[in-house]
Image 1 (tube, helix red, strand yellow):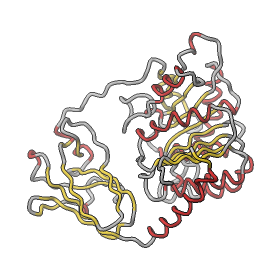
Image 2 (cartoon, helix red, strand yellow):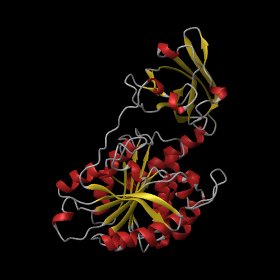
Image 3 (cartoon, rainbow, N blue to C red):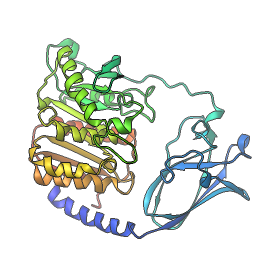
Length: 395
């Protein structure tokens, strides 16, 4: 860890230079596919990625045979990190490994005109579904498979993690509320891998760290709206305020009534990633007397430009603890967007901030798992400070 005064100015200067370069750089990219499984060798291939809204059959991205290769060419791409997968036209026919298991997105950091070659080991529709196993620990259970959310007029599954000592004591515990509940504890229910929150906490508590209860709320089919407190031209009307009304007025009172909790704001935490990170940050601004600590992982501030103005106006009321995290392979705007918000908050509030940047991490559950323990240990510890931690020793 480094003191913010030593690290932050150098980082911001570097970021400004990078942004200036990115505004002008445009590159061409040629993707080559040399090998595919023989069974579908004569079929058309496509690419779906961050450059075409993950459309699995974008006509402009169709691969044509050229000798021994399939290829696609792109032009006018700016410096950025691009993620993509190959398909045969839909997500049931997406590339896999040799055993039919899902593979991580192909990732490419584009800084110049490039030609890159790939091979495809398997296709999803050629394998019987690989059986996923439940992976949550004995300390996790489904509190309710259809908990009613009156503020949103819908039902949702709610998970709960109770510390190992909960059943053997009369102690009361802090509560951490987390978004995207299906991705927190169980590989079986996760779409892209799990955070392993339960395994992390079991280990931390066994090592002497403070214990807490974790409540995980599954996301719904309108996640982009439900977790956004602002209306968006691209995604439509935001329901984030209604969602937080549910969290504050319905879910928290229920948890406090039925479990041995410490209900004060200093013992009430909220965390999430991407849209859930945006929502968790907004919750601290909107309800400073309810939530005292937040984990803001890879926040999707790009979906909510108004968060900058709100930070300006509400920062003086903040005295809680904010843990900000972003990976360097999450796209060109992730870190600048996050730093803009955290800088304003740090300059104008009495809050404690921890800013963590890992230049080698992507936008996924594996990355958020890797820094969960760091987040937890910091927010559960005493102290009031401003720390910037960059895992790139060159910064």
